[in-house]
Image (cartoon, rainbow, N blue to C red):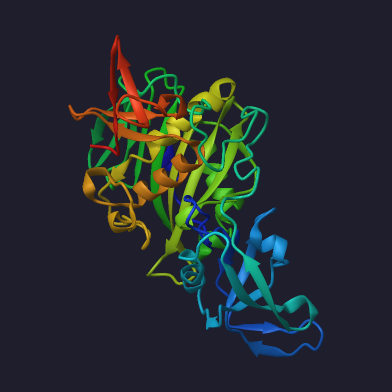
Length: 392
């Protein structure tokens, strides 16, 4: 199970994509630079400042402007950037359609500097969540289309499940299948065991990150793929990771024993080991033949998991009620940001009724011309009740 396999970690800080029309999307993964770099033309070693462009998403605003992996960004809108987080902060609060001046060094041509003007996009590019294999025949949308049928056929009732210092919101009949005493690993499953939702947080030291304990620990994507397979008891194959908002990455995977799903993960520094990391993961999946319909529900359950553990990560700096975030119990945590991000892409979400019952909903639960205005509704015979956003 997941607690036996959770012994590694991953690496990048990501520029958040837009999850609302007001926010711009760049499409770049930044990483820290080593302190020196050798000029490939002269052999000269020099000190480095700025951040490394580790990945550029195909079809993104950054790619259209000509930004390439391996280049170094030193300034954004004239402000020096010295770390991945400072680069994220320099971009995060700019809106779609705004233009950024990005100072770039092309190291492949001998440290040539240039300025790129990048116009931020409103949404991730088409295919942002293209999935592994053929089990997700059409990719989830980058923005909800009301009534398009992305979610469950009816609101799915969610009830609390607890074990030790962890808790989740899951449909009736689900049960806890794995929980370690450190509260760093927690898995719940449907009554049949076919749908599974898991959370884990773990640190990896520099030796593990170097790959001395196996190839699955060498990169964030490899570890997220490995853990997807571990939760479902099979070897997983996956598509490359996709950038999400608030510093998360997502991979879609498929196991050789017939399951498909998603792994969402985020990386933090490991204070005791500068070359090590902490990774936090939310994993959900279902049988491959039903994955398009049911795997999002499993991830929806995974992102409700909360554990009081020593390595509990904070929510992103720009994810809190003052900025419009809806958080479980009024307290924002990392899981709220992960769930908000994933649900905004799929057109799914969490709601509750006046009696305090919580539900997972999809686009077909949305009624544009409802009795009490646009919103998510549940029906009981002739009674149609509008539901309130968020978990109670």
